[in-house]
Length: 309
Picture 1: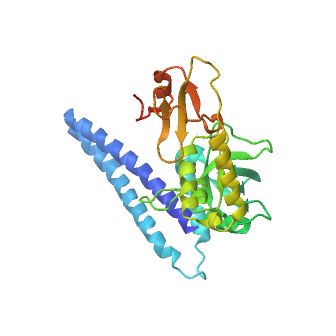
Picture 2 (picture 1 turned 90 degrees about the vertical axis):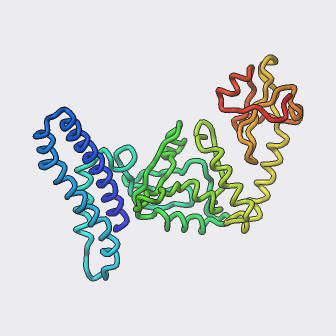
Picture 3 (picture 1 turned 120 degrees about the vertical axis):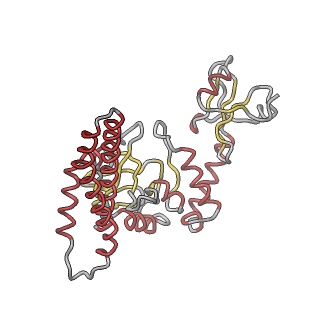
């Protein structure tokens, strides 16, 4: 619970800083206009109390670490609950993503959770082992330890539900430290070898980022990549299929190849005069495509290959 209180206090501090900055600028504006009495009044009746409130909130934020060390015989939970409710009522528009954070009630497996309201959420872009498969328990346990009983932010892509009515979301665990980044849970599971990639258009916003995380885990034999031979063989077979896959252009006048490399080059387009044009294959399942002009390729985020004449 202490983690949640620190996050609430940190958010409230940011809110106060925004107000303090506005009030200080307002007072400065009156001072520049020669209305010094107005400026003095603003400083005395608004800025000073706001600074005092900010200082008190800072003390509470820093003191939360001390509260966390108090023996369990002292029950701080009711006080913390009241603070959470007060802060949510003061700054509802700043409370989490889309004005809300969702409490994780249950972790079904390494890629599926249930949040408040009995809503099932499928983590986008990843595929953790199912029950009975290698590394199922490890993936489920680590996800439960990471976000079970926590409040998380849920972010959408293009398609928001699957065929089973589950929400499709990117999940973020907010940090309780202003100097630390939030944990991108989907990427975390891939990077630590608890899941494979499962990217289906149109929900492919983080395709390259997720593939990079998976490849790092695969190269280092992290998690399931060092323990599950079946998954390794399956990945090798899929990789071979992608190498063999090649689709001809739908329009014979549009033959510029837009290729997406998984080895760091990113999105690159090839003209017929490029040295590797004939050996470059196009697989639209990966987001690769043909272009009619270089301008079209560039507008889609592709850059010209360095081996083109």
